Length: 172
Image (cartoon, rainbow, N blue to C red; front, side, top):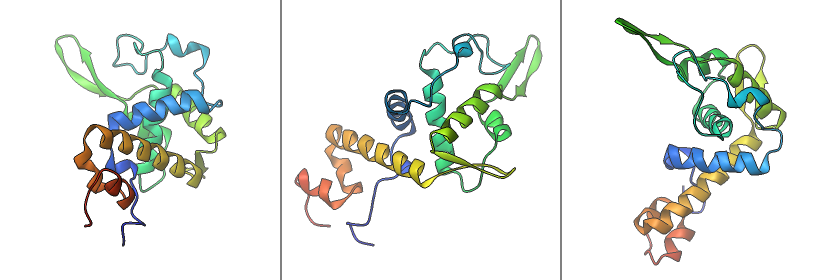
């Protein structure tokens, strides 16, 4: 496989930077993804004491769900996401127990992503990412990678030959 065919994927960039960039993209360019009225007041699960402090948490969660679907090798359903986003609930003096996250927000986000054409349902098995969604995530990963290369030029050797040459790298 030559330099021309290699590309940066979601696996190649830091998750926090990628999710932040994708959340901004979803908020500004995907009109079907928008938080319902109750999203400002709802807790994300029984193990949380308060609603999220970030007013754009809906877009961050949608970006996180998209990333998880991209990395998954099989369809994922609402219950799987409830476990992923769940956590330990404190019970006073008793030891904490694991509680799944609330399912309503996850369900609405999955429905909105499906309406946007970024994911699709596979019968009763769950949802997978569509080629359009995979393309979007790869494009955002490429943008994040380019920003990282501007900050740390040494990372350019992990990208395509075009970036490597633009910062003055040699042939590999």
